[in-house]
Image (cartoon, rainbow over all chains, first blue to last red; front, side, top):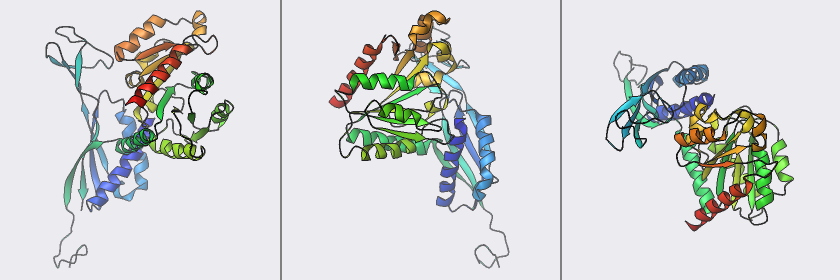
Length: 116
Length: 239
């Protein structure tokens, strides 16, 4: 359950950002989480919702998560492809294992909506 | 008059705006980890983060490593556990300083805790520097892989009784590690454990992973491991 630690760190950061922007309250938080990030999004939301009542500035904030697909680009033939295979995979066209990760490891706070 | 700002209008000040952030969810940990790395580099300390499930033999590996290297290198240890200082006691008996970090429930170490622990460790040395710092993480193959501690290399242990399927089940820790130690190799004959398969799976996830097959009981692979630690340290010092 590293999601609890991640939620706590996120709350600290959201609180700081809200103050910095003179916000009275945070209403929405948008995250981008890659399929390969290893973060269980349901657990993260569960942890956030469990902790948030203790922080009035974000007690009613809602989390929305954009799940970023796992995309590789083949270094040999240049083919970009999406996959659900979280372990090592090969290019569907030329079968090369030399792949560049294009997306899938993201774990970002993209933006927040606040009331000022 | 408006209560919010006294502007003279009869309205409610409730403006909304979107703040673009685009920063890592783990920003706080990452910043403290970068601070630790600078601190280690300034002090000429090579830091190794050791991760495994509970009972894979992290502390035993450390005891063996300390026995082999303590005459040539100044070693310190940060011991991560949820509770007790049993492991730090084991390390101190080997004659090297150890600080116990108890997380009080958290299943991994983070870089802020390591920062505090490293200061305590340095304080106990009365100005003598360290060459090598081992950070023994909390026994867990999942969560510690998310938290950079500022280490130079990350080493993961998988013991024979755990089974050879672990790399595929726990890919993140394999992908983020520099070396894999397969421990308790003396038990291979009692378990259905395929050494070639675990090597192949681990390398498919992380082609640059260095793999050691070891037994603290028979001593198998320990010389190779010590050689690896020495060479990594030498490389770091030459930078």
